[in-house]
Structures are given as structure tokens and as C-alpha cells.
Image (cartoon, rainbow, N blue to C red; front, side, top):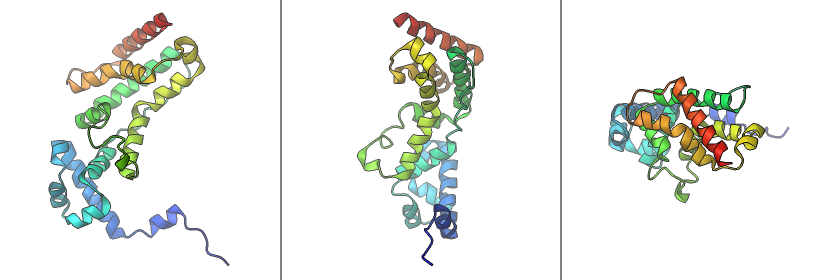
Length: 210
């Protein structure tokens, strides 16, 4: 009989357990440093020292400190907000924005800033980074966190009929921007009532523009 095709599960099961352990130790160390001291604390020397792993071993897992930092941030990305079920456009936006506000408030400050500011220099869509899985994975997490739930609502018939064609990035900034600003400015978090007012102001302004 011919050889059976190799599956991802088969490949994963044959991965060297020492390699798995060393990668986990590096990520544990990088994540702990990130939470405690911010991005400046996540240096190659600090991570290898905390993980008790050689620099050569780190570079077998990550091509650069930027990729290691992206992997550490990836561990801190909160779960994607659940899409609201049922209700009209206003109810869906209020429900989603309230859930987003809770996730943003619970996320580490460094992660909130990085997500909102496009992940800063070195973590953007530079062509040299297009083939790096950690960077692609982080951007995908962030897109799912902030954009996709809103995009799905805006793509629906009720939103298209009421709001027409619009700049979705601008709409996202108008809706989520106040939540993020409040977090970055260390102001008291905005609760459900504030989220309702933000949505109402957004819908009123968009309807007036039609």
C-alpha cells in the first residue's frame, strides 16, 4: 500500500518536545516582561535570561525581537467579541460596542495602544514581514477583534439601507475611538449608557448625511 499523506496533526505530534518547551519558556518570559514593563522591557537579553534559554535557541524560533514581541502580544489579545444576534441595527451596534468596551477595558494598556495605533513601526504591512507567521497571526487577531464584527453588521441590508455607502474605517473610529481614548487617557471606563449615546450620535450623524 502507498504511504498515507502527512497531516498537520501528525506533524505536530512528531515535533520535538524540547523545541516545544523552549518556545513556551521564551513566550512565557516575553509575555511576563511585556505585561510588567511594556515593550521596552522585551529585549533579547532580558527574555533569554528570564527563560534560561540561549540566544541561538531563541533565533531558531523567532527571526527577530519584533517577531518575538508580536508573538507575546498575540498571547494578550482578548477573545473576539461575540456577534449580536437579532435586533435592529441600533441594537446590534450598541450590543457590539458595549462588548468591545469591556474587552478594551480589560486588555493591557500596551496592547490597546498597539492595536489602535496600527501596531507601530516594524509591525505593519511592510513587504519584508509578509511571510512571517507571527506578524500575520497578530494582524489577523487584531482585525478580528476590532473590525470584522463591525464589518459584518455594516455589510448587512439594514445598515446599507440606512447608512448607504460609507468609509468603514472612519465609522469604526467614530464608534470605537471614544472607548480607546478613554482607556489610553486612564479615564473612568465608558459603560453601556455611554455606548448607547455613542451609537445614537453616530446613527444620527450618518442619517443626516444621507
